[in-house]
Length: 293
Image 1: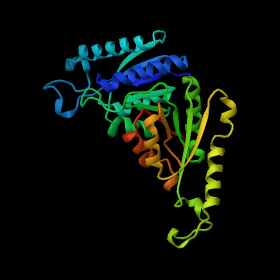
Image 2: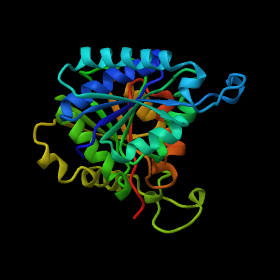
Image 3: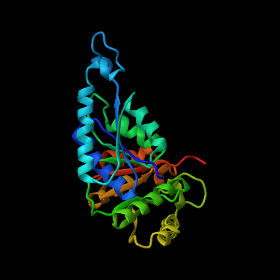
Image 4: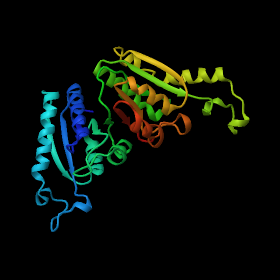
């Protein structure tokens, strides 16, 4: 997409870190950067006699403008050649940023924000946006490591194809390696020849390992030829998906997961694996949602 990179700004240290990341991404992609502040008074803080949805009447216009000016300076210092626009939008951050994502190439938010003036708490805005945004969402947590590899969570489902493509493109843009990690266990549905309760069925571990190797290879099919500059480290790991990804994130610059995938132990549903990574990864996380067919 050629749309801008959109970043949610609330003045918190987390959102300012997100501004820096968003500016770099916009510069690498050759698109504009849009700084968005979603304004809405929490019910408990509505000024007496004031209209809650009007920044001017609420007497905070100067504060909002100052926050956006600070964010713009931070963005300009990070990527001076990027065209920057800024906007104050009346509404809840969840709704505002979801709408903004419809015309963006990437949405960036911090993992933690302020408790007012457009809060960006992972449990609310960031988590909701990751599940519902039209474009990929990058949640900035910890201190980004620009030299770290892209860590891609592979589950082999068609719905995760967008995440695979995003990971390759991101690795190519940043000039870093790609680690494609596929975790498996004997509780995988592929371990059994026919439907039955796992405790009463036997499995062929060697055959299962070969099958999981095939799943990993097919998930990357075609992308390695399209991005010959990206060095790919294929990792087939026996273990729990969440634990494997979080552990590997310690050395990564970005974790990429799909918002929809196969259900069960191999799944990458936002409510399970992706949600766990968003909360516990040691680096920023990109969630790429794929619409159901």
